Amino acid sequence: MVFGVAGVPTNYKGKFVNLFDWLRGMGLNGYEIQCTYGFKISEENRKIINAEQKNGMYFSMHAPYYINLGSLNNAVVGRSKSNMKEGIELAKLIGVNRIIFHPGGGHENTIEGRKRAIDQLVDAVNEFTSEIDMGDVRLYPEIGGKTASLGSIDEIIEICKRCEYCYPCIDIAHLHAREHGSIQTKQDLIDRLSKIKREIPEKFKHIHFHAYTINYGDKGEIKHLKHGESMPNGDEGKPNLDDFVAVLKEMKIEPWVISEALDTQELGAKYMHDKYVS
Ligand SMILES: [Zn+2]
Image 1 (cartoon, helix red, strand yellow):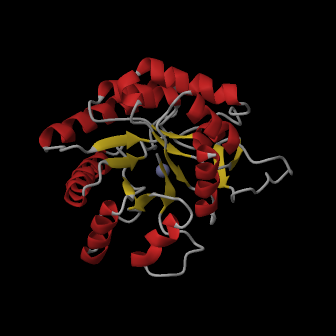
Image 2 (cartoon, helix red, strand yellow):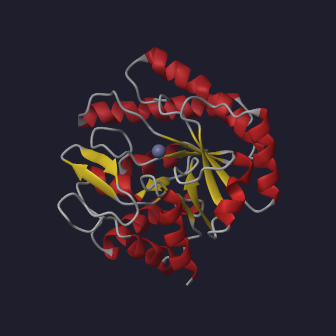
């Protein structure tokens, strides 16, 4: 069971070295390293991460946002492939075995265009993963928040089927946003997760989640909400986290859940953790 945050929470004002005691104080044991500007971690932070792994902290790593393996621009795809290889080497070095990445965008947003982009992404991933020793590193393509971005539930399943090293990262807020508010009930979540379980049962065992509430519009994701914040029209924020935790239990899913609630991710993670263990 892993519940944690993505990056250093806004509400935490101390040093990185002391962050993990702060998280543990809330019952949290997960930290997603945000490599927003590149796969780089200072020597000092590597040592801290190493020590905290021995203290029971679980680390995953989020790839830079500029990585785009589905792009129409060959130069971008080429750079993304070598960036991913660097990321995998870094992950092995620090003993992290989950790398989350966005499948990308910039393709033609038609059925044919998306299909071509997925084919290209699958080829790219299979190429760079065959060129290096993957150790026990797994790659997690994430559900995209915008309707135009790659990473629908079917696309994530397809990538995981066709790429040996790919596993599903299900961002339930992105899913809800890209499907214009599709996660209204517990059953809506069960339906989607059951589909993934049916299609890729072995990989489903190692599923990774991002969970928080979100505001969306016609094009999908607009903004992550703060934990407990209502939608601009006053409606309750969705997806409902109580439902999510109940589904984890009902489906007996081993949770690895990262909160990305706006400026309040530790509160979101603590809320889900406490519900889960209660
Ligand atoms: Zn992400």
